Structures are given as structure tokens and as C-alpha cells.
Image 1 (cartoon, rainbow, N blue to C red):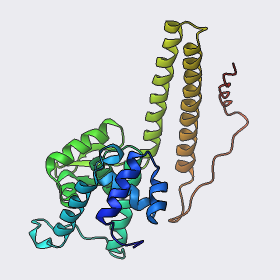
Image 2: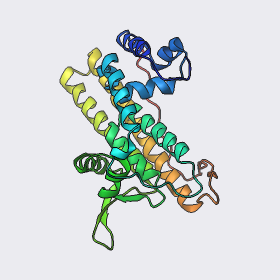
Image 3: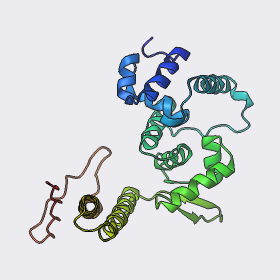
Length: 265
């Protein structure tokens, strides 16, 4: 029934839909389920290319069995801050994790980043992450190394000389600028192919358009990220839920790069 737990038949239909190349929204519509339910189900069980209905069903039953036996855990999950609904917090963290997974972030890395983002202190030790997520220290170490390589977190030592993982308030600025650098590398690589393939060839013209597009998008991302960071630094929100308006273009601001022209042939 809609809203209830997915059945083995539902999972078989999800597997068939993925094999047919259907979008999550279309699979959800056919099963009369929320799209988020299908997204979470697939991403938890191998992703769109690795999803298997029978394996997903057994994994779900195993997780449900483990939840019914909390006494078997040797470490208790950390308490939620006063005034917060523990179930609502857990559901929100799962939704945020699923969102990052849908954008290509591996599951464990997404769980660690979500934990740091939703912690008031913005930092946790490796031991605290192990306790929160109920996983091995090796899993935490691998996830944190990945996030650190992407510039999303940093490590530091506290006054007790414990290594802490910290997420900065400008984490999205760092992420956006990293994306812009990737666009620049793509543009440079595409443009190298222009000479290799011959400037007047259809392939070279295609690569030139890719290079111009990536340059335009990368420069726009860099400019917008810097403007947003400076605006929020100058006028931080005065209360939870408040947000600053988008920065207005000033007369002396640098002109935006011209959009790449379409290749009409």
C-alpha cells in the first residue's frame, strides 16, 4: 500500500524500471510512491547500475532485524540536543544524505558530511563519528580522507590533542570553487583536442564549443560564489531562517563573460 514498506514485488518492479532506463520519478509514479522513497531505496542498495531486488530485500530485512535488537549494540548513539525531536532529526539526516548520494557523493562520505553539518559545533572526532554512525574506524578514516581531498572538511587537533574533523561555514564556497577548477581543466583539455583533430573538422568545432561552455560556466560559478561569500560575511542572518538577498551587480563590477555561441552549421 502507498506509504507502507516496500514489498519484494515492489523491489522487483524497481529493478525492471531501472533496467528499462526509467527515471526515479516514473518508477515512483507507477508504484504510487514518493520519488524520495525510490531514490533512497536504490541508493542504499547498489545504485542504479548495481540494484538487485532480492539482495535489496534481504538487506532491508537484515537492517530491520538489527533495529529490533538495540541491546546488541555495544555503543549507544549520542543523545539529540534538548528541544529537538530525535526521529525528525534522524529523518532529516537521512534525507540530506540521500540528496548528496543522488549528486554522486558515496554513501559513507555523505553520512560523515551530514553528521558534521548537522552538529552545532561543526566538528567531531573520529571516535565520535564512529559512535554516531555505528561503523568501523577504518570506514570513518577513508570517508574523511576523501572529504578532505575535496576541500569539504579539514582536520585539526583540540586542546586534548585529539584529531578533529571540522566543516567550515564556507564549505559550499570551497565546493563551488573546486567545481570551477574542474570546469577549467575540462575546457583546457577540450581545447587541446581542437588542434589535434584539425580546426575545421566537426569534432574540433564540437570540442571548441565544449571549451567555451565550460569556461563560461566556471567563470560564472567563481564570480557568483565569491559574491555570495562576501555578502553573507558582511550581512550575516540575524535570526534562524533569515537569508540575505542576492548581491546586486555594481557599476564597477567586472562584466560577465559572454555566453558561448551555438554552433550553427
